[in-house]
Length: 186
Image 1: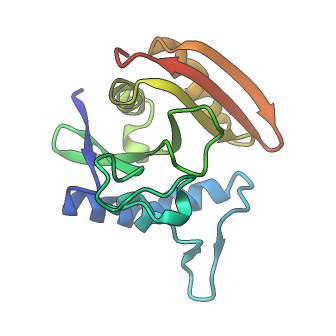
Image 2: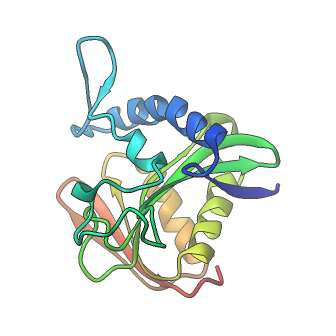
Image 3: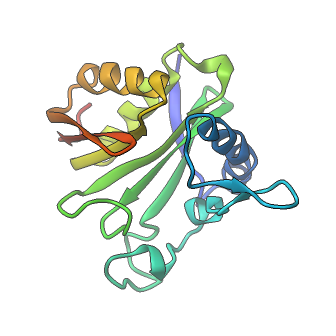
């Protein structure tokens, strides 16, 4: 299986794909007691943050430090579409420093990961995470909702298999948190 990442803020079709499958992901999260999202009166998930993951410029409100719109590292909030050969099968969203929604002292956070059912358990997610770890060296961070047993099992298996260093797992209210270091060689 050949897995690649497509930058959703660059590819219009990739951005459209992420936008279209985002509600499936949020619906799935809602089954694990994630109370961050709720349905509005017309059936849309709120808050609707998908546009922030596909924008070429990260909103200033999502940054710890103000960065110009033409800063070379923009965006700091990056949605990557997971592709198996030519087929789009999911996404992984990564926030990079100075992204506001990650702890101090980290270079990036893997904020969201979703693969359509057909490709779960087939290695697509692990290969996509490997591509993320190669692209983003440094101190990494991620969280999983405590009730999401499948995600927890995935991260417990995938991170060691991908060779991250200084791996630690901690429990926080309602979630598990992993921290690790990568050197871009996963």
